[in-house]
Image (cartoon, rainbow, N blue to C red):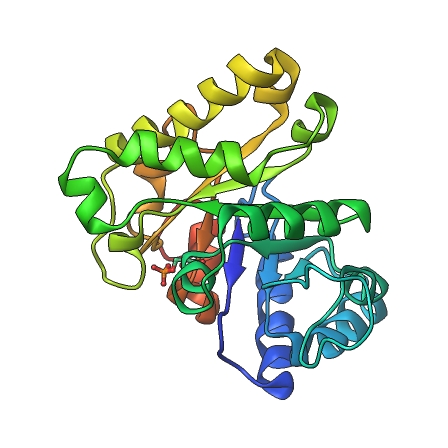
Length: 256
Ligand SMILES: O=C[C@H](O)COP(=O)(O)O
């Protein structure tokens, strides 16, 4: 379960949220099963989160929201994979629809970023998904699989087995318009089937496929019940500890 904070929370707010989240995850009244919990703060928060997680040996993992296609040099404003790895990031989100839309990121750019993150020892969370027009035209599966093909190009089967792909239909992001569990399964299942076809069983079975788009504690259980949904990439709801920790235990039932 990965919480993408997007451009929210300064480093002090980040420390408060991660402390509360870690405290909740350790609360024995909750059943979090085997869930892996990841926060994805803005770059400016990462050092504070690292210090907290290392210092208190918290079980929360963390990642970055983007990474440069370049290794180093005259690229003002960019952050390299090596810098993120040095900060202890386990994951890097690449190709989020907001980056594709506002920064013109193509599958080729996303692919380069995924390789940079992977080569530096981090797991790329490769985001794919269709907009509303494509969905209305009934081309959402083909569109998303083309993004998967382009974004995962050049990875060997044994590498694909360790990757994460997040299916995020753009029309469901931040809109409250959650895809039905059947919608999520249709595309997440197609992603895994494509990976099986191209890379074989071990890659398809190892790959983790997340769903993202207006996931809340109240709707997560139905989505997680689907065979090919392994987790969620959560935006807005990850900014509230109660909501996000509910998502991490697949339930909005309060603890008595
Ligand atoms: O990365 C997260 C997704 O964009 C989902 O955001 P949301 O949960 O606010 O809809």
